[in-house]
Image (cartoon, rainbow, N blue to C red):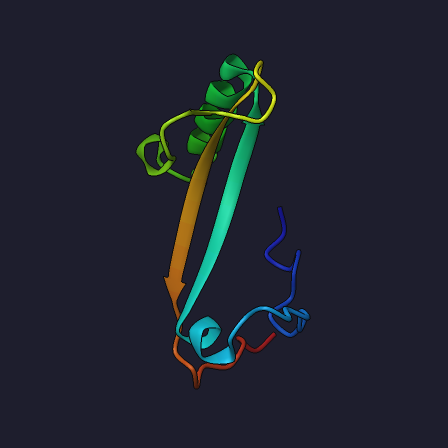
Length: 88
């Protein structure tokens, strides 16, 4: 996947976010929902691609659909308030 998938220059309208909190730390949740086998295989595939360690994911939990489970990966990145996007 290209690093330019979402440009740093894009501004997103987040009406419920507080600017001070967003500027100190970015939090991204990645959720995988599906069959138990599908969720395990997806987490292993993402590990093989170097996306996240297997242990970084939450324990598998039941999802809204009784035949499905889910696991969540939380990524936190501290960023400085005076940083600028990298030059292209």
